[in-house]
Length: 136
Length: 112
Image 1 (cartoon, one colour):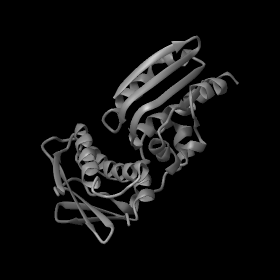
Image 2 (cartoon, helix red, strand yellow):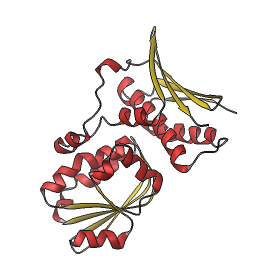
Image 3 (cartoon, chains in turn blue, brown):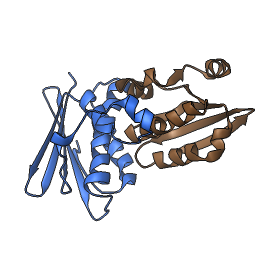
Image 4 (cartoon, helix red, strand yellow):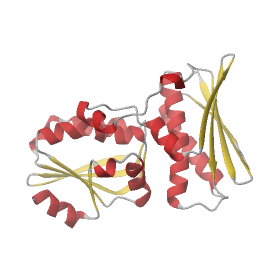
């Protein structure tokens, strides 16, 4: 099964990433909601990397690898942009976002609530985000 | 993503067809930013063919909600697929926004 995709950093490629994840997950028995949640979590990370870490620069790219072992799905998303600083991350207050009309900032909250484990790693100029989800 | 509008008296029905992600949500933001939308008393959002929503799509609704509330414009979602509703629920947005099952219910609430 094909488990790797690389796309250039434009938002239009998010659909391609979602389709790739959907196709990979078709081999597993998942409900519509489970499938959608996992696709969403990967999409959110990739959108953040494309837009924020790589400033939608089409000369840059991100790669996604998917593996599964003993019922645990592992997604590795690699890029060479600006590293995500987890220590600076704050869980959003949605009611406050509504009050001030804030548009962004809820994507990582979705990822954290959907996935079982979320890790970020940086070595040299390469960043990797690891997402883990137990499906069995 | 296809967005179509239908006007019924003081109600505007916005039909969303496709996937609302970081790329396509710009179009929805433009539609909701149109000054003309503030002339309606109700905005009904038909989500029957909305197959996907990411935080960017949610963010567009989040960012306009207060403005509509301040202008006493009701924003009501209906015909939402379970998997899409689930995304609203993960963030608790189903408690902060009005999501009903179908058009009839949406119109009843809108008329209250």
